[in-house]
Length: 170
Image (cartoon, rainbow, N blue to C red):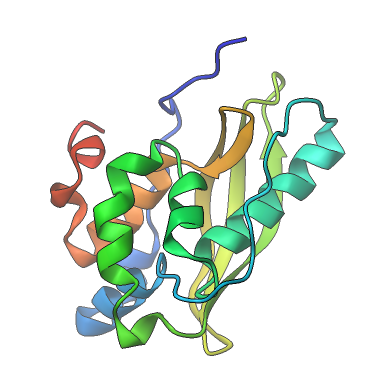
């Protein structure tokens, strides 16, 4: 079975209108950083139901946004991860990255169980930084991943989406 590599649904980052100046930059930079040793990616999601897919999406999104997840694991949890490796690694070295986490409040799967719309909130030190944001999860290589367009939208908030080829193409 072949899985889609690009999204047809484009989320509009509502946070751009709510966050201003350096807060926007710092929040977006902190989103993808990991320096600890916890939270391994869920792998080999080959056979699942809608309920188990939702659970996997929540688990993988939490791991991707967690400051405790190591960079190599984060790269595995975003669609087309190798394209984002350099920016994820650079951001992992920023002090603002400590204490980042995410919660997922809603997951709506498509009928083929290959994509999902996700509503999530990113927190820093327990305080909501981006609340009820729309995103997309993609099933790629048997793993539910943060959609590249969702991650590119966050990178756009900080002005670094242009540094990633896959973001330029979207």
